[in-house]
Amino acid sequence: MGELKRFSFENLDVWKAAMSLAKSIYTTTKTWPKEEMYGLTSQVRRACTSISLNIAEGSGKYSLLEQAKFTNIAYCSCLETINVLILAKDLEMINEETYIRLRKDCEIIAPKLVNLRNSQLKRHKK
Image (cartoon, helix red, strand yellow):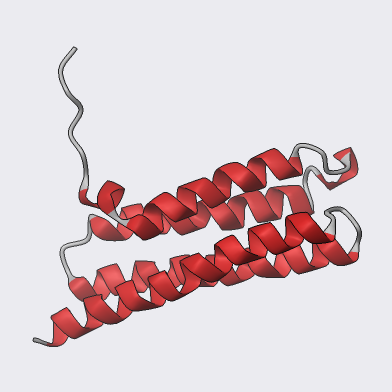
């Protein structure tokens, strides 16, 4: 079997961090109450996977302006993930230590997304 092609998004540190966050969120939510399967569990899983999905989808867009749009959606999904984590902590679905670990992961990803979006917009204006 031949070597697989690597797409540009797979080289981005922010995409790698988002993938790592998604894996951590999936692992963490396995222990959440079953009655939340279609509530907060589903919501945070969709929000955190949306980060890497939008980075990947945006990388396929020809226009830098369109790429920036998808990067902005990824950023918004990161904020949504943080919001669900806050609620999960308040509802005692996760402990303080888990909350802080996942929150810090989001706080690493968010500025990287802002920098990527700003870079895309700056290159678009040239």
